[in-house]
Length: 107
Image 1 (spheres, rainbow, N blue to C red):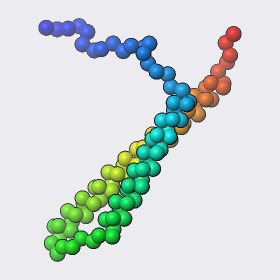
Image 2 (image 1 turned 45 degrees about the horizontal axis):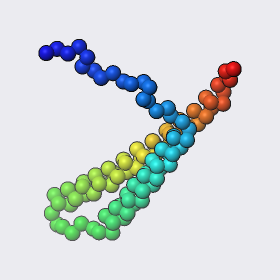
Image 3 (image 1 turned 180 degrees about the vertical axis):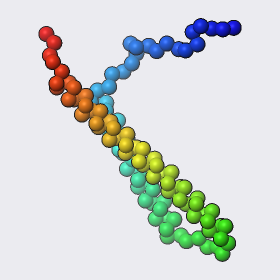
Image 4 (image 1 turned 135 degrees about the vertical axis):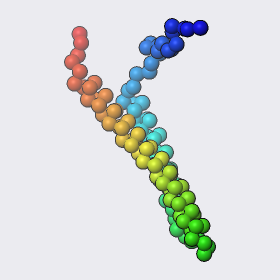
């Protein structure tokens, strides 16, 4: 009924070490995704701007404006997250390179 080992034990031997090359590859992928999301965001915003709302009802205008803002905002949030991840991975790659160069050599 009561199992003493409810939390799974992590296998330390199976963990993959982060290398500068892996960090740079991840930054390139994340930066590419960020650029793609940025391009989509600009296309959506331009599309919304060129198609005005055709209604006399004030409630419809407000709801439409809110939905358009939410759509562009969500894509902008994804763009920002991918950009921050890319910058963080590049910074980690630099940190790993500096640590590798400044590490005293063991004989």
